[in-house]
Amino acid sequence: MCGIVGYVGYKDAESVLTVGLHKLEYRGYDSAGIAVLKDGKIHVRKKAGKIHELERYLVEKNLPKSNIGIAHTRWATHGGVNDTNAHPHLSQNGIFAVVHNGIIDNFSHLKGYLEKQNYHFKSDTDTEVIANLLEYHYLNDRNLTKAILKTVNELEGSFALAILFKEDDDLIIGIRKDSPLIVGLGENENLVASDQVAFLQHTKRAIFMDNGEITLVRRRMVEFMNFSGEPVKKTYVFLNHGDDEAEKGPYPHFMLKEIYEQPKVVMTNYKIYTRNEKPVLLRDLNLRKLLLNKTRIIIEAAGTSYHAGLVGKYLIETFANIPVEVDYSSEFSYRRLAADSRTLVIAISQSGETADTIEGLRNAKRYGLDVLAIVNRPESTIARESDYVIYINAGLEIGVASTKAYIGQVQVLTLLAMELGHIKGLIPDEEVIKMIASMKSLPEKIEKILLLNSHIEHIAEKIYTSDNVMFLGRGLNYPTALEGALKIKEVSYIHAIGYPAGEMKHGPLALVDERLPVVIINPKTSAYELTLSSAHEVRARNGRIISVINENDELMKEVSDYIIYIPEVEEFLTPITSIIPLQLLAYHTAVLRGCDPDKPRNLAKSVTVK
Ligand code: M6R
Image (cartoon, rainbow, N blue to C red; front, side):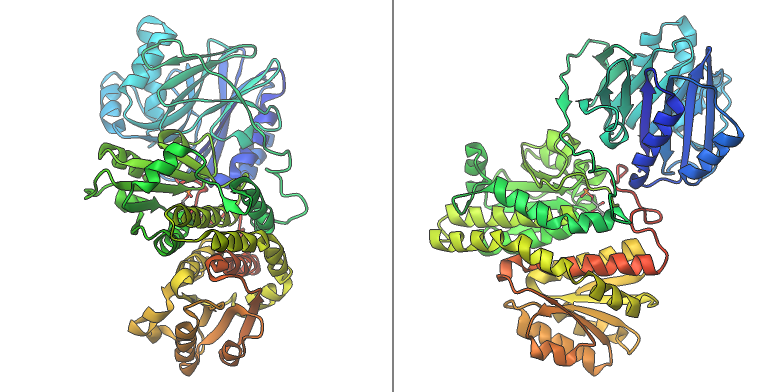
């Protein structure tokens, strides 16, 4: 979604900010803009479209050289995609320039009030209201702190803001409420951004702001206060992201790079979460005790994380015999919960910033339920607001289509299910040791699947002109079918449905003809025979079958047009091995169709609006 970056220091602000904007591109956006402060005047340039449109415009209409500025990538919510609605927004008298992530819920009320005070609005955005409100309060008694505090307390909704004030060329005001904002601490320079990728090349020292905090960022000093104006003490953390994490390296796209990073993710989690061939995810004794007391689990998540949750349900129910429901966060957060204190809510999220999932966890808290988060980003809102957190250690995921984070989520849920089953006495020691040994060999098996890249590219050549693709899987690989369909939809814009193989004959079978590619995920599992029957049903209707199966599977081979052979693993690990070819299939299909898999149209990396 939207991205913010601000810089105050000694370097050329325009170039720091445009590089920062490029780093934020992956989050999804439809316009971009930049403002710098020079000689007591704020200069703004903004353009609908991609950042290179803005860069072209900056060549035509130079900005003055300056060492302070703010910039933004906008993902439209209030008002269409055009130059005027792009951020930064100047206040009526040019005193403040504001960039904003989030939504101001009471903006029409505030706008009405300001219009009565002779404020005229140029854009249709909620953000311009913030700029004018701040200016209105400031002009009242020329007290900046008072004006900021009044403004933030009148705004309802979610907002991360970076603000330039024309009367101070050593100040960026940063404000956070329900939308992330991070301060990057440099030497004689400081930065503010909605995502640390925007400033990693300048500094790795960062302060994560909490909700309800304001920061005054200067070249040599950074201060914090709360929305009542009381000073807040903050400590910095050192970001241990590798320099190359936010770079594509030799890969043409982040999506491909991240698919190839999956063996590493699995190995990292194996190392972190196992000891002496046993899972040790529940080292925290309080968490262990808590889990053992729970008789029901509700998983809430969105998109790919929801699919990981479905795998988690199968495994937790099978290994630990605890009933699990999986709900879309957007549904879970707005319904009445029939749950008691023996219910645990698990919130799964790569970014930890998905608005629906945050709302879901807050809803759970309103009911007094304990929340365990499974997230990738340690500093995220979900990680901070949950009672317990388990990290998936996937590293920065830049591609909008989640790949390596899914693998991390599924692996962590697998370990959690296994450990719960083990400590409940449902899985004997020797069985757990065997299972962990199988997990240890997983990275090697994934490497083997990655060697199929060109073969999968050839299969993509057979389907990339199709209008529809169907994905079928059963049992543990029903979520794989859903995830395979989501991947291809997101990056190649081909309509795709994922279905439980056994359910297909109750309706979707009517779609099957010789033009429909049907991807059947059927590695050797307890669902094998039944999925084979579904494959025959598709074959009998002349559907074109692409199968994801184990080597030497003659029965599936007979009904398949194209085959992707994956190495055999124990059933509980098949959701990990069988999704990888589907990620590659989606990737190549997108590239063949001329789509950018890293930045699919209309989508954002983390969906921070409800
Ligand atoms: O950051 P989260 O895991 O909470 O994000 C949830 C979904 O928005 C996300 O998985 C989305 O579906 C991805 N684009 C999937 O590739």
